[in-house]
Image (cartoon, rainbow over all chains, first blue to last red; front, side, top):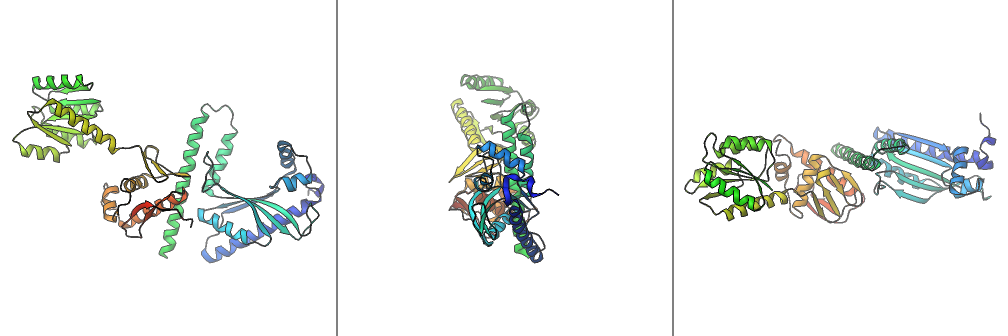
Length: 209
Length: 227
């Protein structure tokens, strides 16, 4: 087992990062179970959570031109704790967002709705940065302390697109990048159309019952 | 502009073709209906002028053959003055206009221009209303955000945008958008209305489709509401 000393970038706060992450994962997982009991379907399809690795955080500090210190990692950066929640339907995303905002100690520092306002390349996802008050000491010496949590929410279709686009983005020597860009955008808009149709079908079915 | 002229009277045919060419039209000439149908199958024309009385295959038979291949190019029929039945038969077979002989070539040219205009205005590539753009050539619905539509969604949205503010009944919509499938159930219309409602909302359009299940429905300006 890797000890605390492997994640020097977070100093003595690495263990707390895991506690804060595990707490919100448990809350979301319990919420998922509750919805499943009620409707038969979970609110999300799957959920990924990670504390950003030492290497990635060190690299990001260098890239952003800040010193490689716990202060940079926990105060300048906001993604030491990252969650990705993948849903089957579009409306589930907004329902999860509403739930997250009710969690104790949570305040939203920033949120970007790239679903209603897709990025020019077609990327769709909902991004939130939370500031959470927890009963542990933070880097400023406060207790209760404050930790950032980044959450990305998207549907399976948006996630497939993001994953494929990510892979293609790093391909070198693309002959016609402009055409590929246009086609990826078209795929994103077609998938968005399907997401909305699937959502509508579910709504119509639920109205009938 | 490329015109197909089918006329068996050689002198008349040559005179009309010469005048049209002088007006910078490209003109292909057919001496009978059979040749006209063959040329129509090979080439794309902006307008076709077909005489009714022709040897081998008459103009009405040629027109039926052209239309049965799915060709919707505007067609002007040339008929003898007294023959009302010919004019009726021609229009019923899919002609867009007719001209009775004898005619002034200037009038024929004006009718050709009129048909070409109609064809252009019938198939606009992009429709706009409010902050919404519907790009028909790529099936894109766009306002602050964009999504792609399926063929039927496109047809339905186009129908609404060409009839802004007008009430459309379920029967009218079925008749226009699902004309190729008479067995379509009314339920389908509500489903497609629902798709469009959610897609208009998703692109933050300032247009909404008003109307409950069963219709009638109307596309009108209105702020989108986030549900």
